[in-house]
Length: 102
Image 1 (tube, helix red, strand yellow):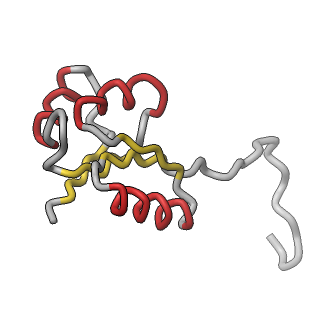
Image 2 (cartoon, rainbow, N blue to C red):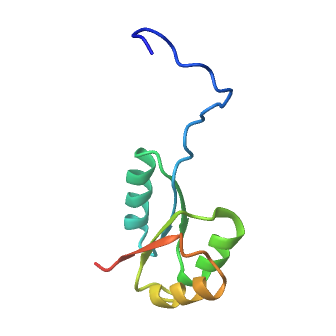
């Protein structure tokens, strides 16, 4: 192909990739708000869950996150129990989990 010559059209449209969806599971409002602000400013789509005992329903019902950022110590269920619940509910392992161990 010569310089300034265009490649032939393929008929395939390329759309922008969808933003990564991140579920924030954190009971501390200031940490939760900070994570939402920072991640949202970077273009990520976020959802929050304040209690461990609501993680499975939030994940399966309406959000399907690509990544879960989860506190370990929370009311309801701790982060390790939530991981077991997510696996038992059939949440695909592609949803990566990152613990906040402060």
